[in-house]
Image (cartoon, rainbow, N blue to C red):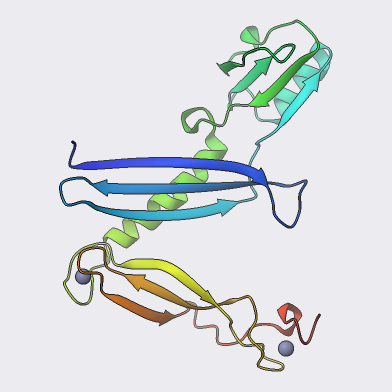
Length: 197
Ligand SMILES: [Zn+2]
Ligand SMILES: [Zn+2]
């Protein structure tokens, strides 16, 4: 087994509150195989070109492909529900048989939009690894969970806003609950179920 491995995994699904908006969720994990330790970064964004569409002629094909960022982003194509032809990156490789189903190819090396979230998570992972544990000084002290319930500034009722973060060391399992890093102590009443039901 290699000592260190880095991997990412994405999921694309309808946003839980806005079903017509696709949500991109990504996990980045660094595994230290020799020491059996891993560090995880999780993030999500609405900025994605995850989509699928049936086109009936070359004009429609060109319009949809351009809208999806082709050829900078790769496409996949399928006819009559047959197997997907993946990784298309040149106009000349888009088939001219219609109708056809086009979809964006979401593999990271073919989709720069997906890569921007992976880049953000990579920076978070670097920051985490550069943070030593206050107890054992091992690298990688960082947030592993968030507690909701920041009080409303109007009535004090707990809201769905983040109240505090749980930090953990993967070496010695040292745990700390810390306040929000931005120092915000109260939530806007617009987000309160009591003041703004
Ligand atoms: Zn520690
Ligand atoms: Zn309130």
